[in-house]
Image (cartoon, rainbow, N blue to C red; front, top):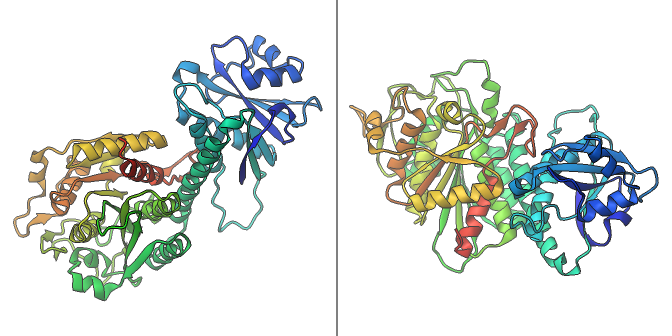
Length: 502
């Protein structure tokens, strides 16, 4: 979809459809909606009087203009109550409207900076979220489908303004929104790919291609190099797979210093059978997405490289499959992670934390000032929070607060979970320094406490996206399937750290 900003009058724009807004509880049209209503001889006003248009959030009313406007259709999109408007509601509303129009085979859409001037939403923010919503909401994954789609394609979205002074801000907002949405859709593509098309080697190729496109430094460590570094936890998980593990490192330098301001770590299990502790077959197909955290980190780095914040960022993805086999890791085995800490394996299905242990060790060895990891880590988090929000745990409240704020800006809800010292007791082993499962209770927390052992005293936040990485239904700007969660949160966090804002 091409998105552009133009100076003009929306009633004179040629398009398949134009979109205007109406708020719940209002009795009269305002601004652009009023001008469009006048051109339609009061058609919108009459529908409001008749109760057909109520302005409820996500209520869309399609009106054919029948030649009274250059645009063939008008959609009146409800934004809910004006006093409850947020930028995320604008993002979700444009997504719903664009899907409606796509299903009507409309190929060009025009609107104005929706919500600008309300609830402290600037024109720049409006352009950003409109672009995000349109691109995210119309996303589809059809790489392996040969039949034609049962809907059209919106090829162009035009954001129209009558205020010449707002053009620079709208251009900046649209550009940022495009970068954020395209990065999120890349992460969705990666997590939606079947596991035979998204192996550890494929993840490494994606990261390398992104690095070449946007000027990132990249290196991919092979098994021999992992052995030299003592990454016994990652290699233990990888030992049954015929696919070679890949330890992917991306480096963005926004400052001319050797300092690593922040490390982003993503779980990269390209298929998780559970290993010897094998999962039930029902629902195992979802485990092609067990690398969604790694995909989010790779995609976020591409966006960061395009937005060019003045900060240094290291990204790490430990990619492998977790499979059963004659050479597989077994319950009862003891592994030695990078740095020398020993781990008793209770369940081979708690493999993600093993790979992350070595990734955390690598980040610390390279002097990362702070760390955020993203992982589809525990079914326990999915039970606790469902698919509504991501769980956050960590050792530094200031960094946790910044991550939650970055998520709120992206419309990605994050809820902090407790990290009381008493939970560490469940991870104590009688035969090693630590065990990889702390029992049935508080599974998401004990998993985070396991990771905390390897984060040490470096400020660190863990995002468990097990409930949010996949959606079972199409809603707002989330498609059915992989959501690309955490990409925009990570980018927003890095941008805020670079500027010093909270």
